[in-house]
Amino acid sequence: MIIDAHTHLWIKQNGFVNGRPVKAIGGGRSNFGGEIKQMLPPYMSSGENPAELLISNMDFAGVNCAVVTQEYIDGIQDEYLKEVAKKFNGRIKVCSLYRDYEPNAEIGTDRFDGIKICASRLTDKNLLKHIKVFELAAKNGKFISIDLDEGDRQCAMLSEIAESFTDLKIAVGHFGMAGRGDWLSQIKLARKKNIYIESGGITWLYNSEFYPYHSAVKAIKTAIETVGIDKLMWGSDYPRTMTAITYRMSLDFVMNSDELSETEKKKFVGETAEKFYVFKKMPEIKRIKHMAED
Image 1 (tube, helix red, strand yellow):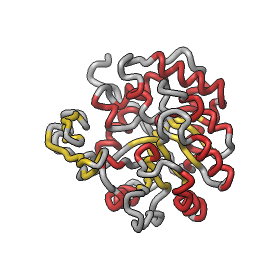
Image 2: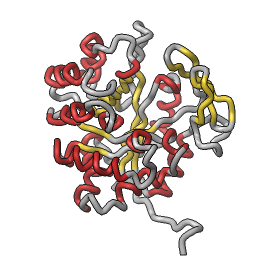
Image 3: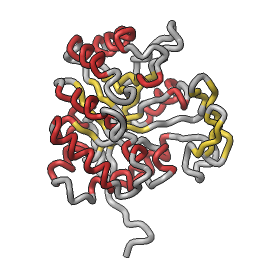
Image 4: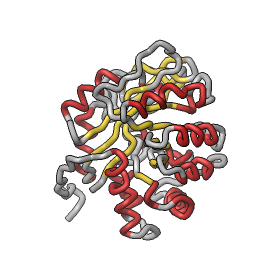
């Protein structure tokens, strides 16, 4: 049982960064606010990032289910993700995108499983000023997926919100921005009963080291010592991290590590996420050998 807690999908990229547009220009590249960046693996040359390719990668890597979050840099994908949720019902859960830059925008809850908050990109980074979105999620039984600013800048605010809505499940992304600033302050948030940590983007954070990411594994071990394995979940940050590694490698650096016990691996890559996101339909994935294997 393997669940990916942090992926992204889009058909047309129409986002922005620091107020400047992010647009696909072909070859997997995007104009990223005036800078050309390889946003997708080069073989995803159309600029589209559809669910079917994610499912193919999941099947090859043996991943049963996934959660699709959103990001300002990709643009609003609400309508497309509604279609994805319907087509891959039970295997993929989807988040609507909270847009603080559109004060009157309706926050999607119908046919969505959760709400994504890009807290590090908010116009006003005081989370208490955005209390209504947390209240809405709690009222409608949705989870919150949130990427915090580096270090402890927003930790006290999220802690206060978690105490106000004790039944609201909150997943902090990017493994607390591991290795940057006081990242353990974000990990310690998981001492609250309703806050969990997911590792989407951890291979990006340790990209300079590259596979098999020994420092990322050490960060996971440190987090286990700090809050326990039952509050931690694996995420790939597909497809962004696939510009450096394969999807399977984003999982293998954990599964092949001799620093994590088998029990820790099982909980980290699936068991905890199954309980948090409440996946009920878990398709069996048969492993298929690839052409480089005997």
